[in-house]
Length: 72
Image 1 (cartoon, rainbow, N blue to C red):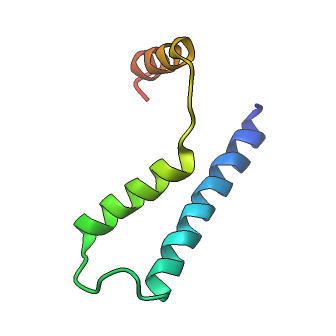
Image 2: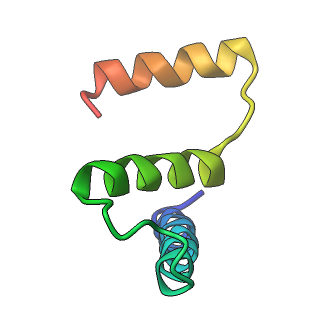
């Protein structure tokens, strides 16, 4: 994936999550008493659902090492 493809991918993923969360807010499914704590957790859950990918053990290990080494 080149730089522009990565940017498009991330933008699409973020917009998809944003649209789902805004829909839930506009449809009044999000409780009124929720503040930043619950909304942060809800966003984390939605991103986790949207970004879920199953990596084999070797790829996951290489990914984890790259994140650590590059301080990502």
